[in-house]
Image 1 (cartoon, helix red, strand yellow):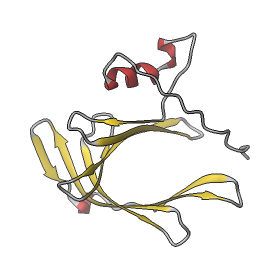
Image 2: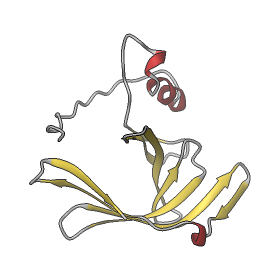
Image 3: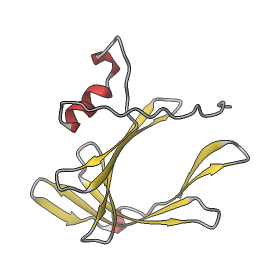
Length: 149
């Protein structure tokens, strides 16, 4: 069983480079063998002025590690959060955000759209599915929990 989560460290610094380049360089430790800095979340304003959160989650499974890139924004046009998935953000998913009966976050997926350069279309739900995710801090277990259906 894993031990308690160490306290978070907050560091803020100006970096003279564009965000995609910073992200690329910090995710590959072999590029900087004397130090290791990997972001799991970056918050910023994108080129459209929207508040944006980008993160990389790593799931360490017995056979291998799986990475999951995502960028989340609030869409004024759609009046909801939109999650852009994958390293090239080809899939956009509407997210309904709420609070569950125990005070945890609840995220439910909605309409899905696929984009590749100038081509864009609604992704047929018959070929996909919906996600219902709960995230919360468990006082009993003293750990962060995620449940996905």
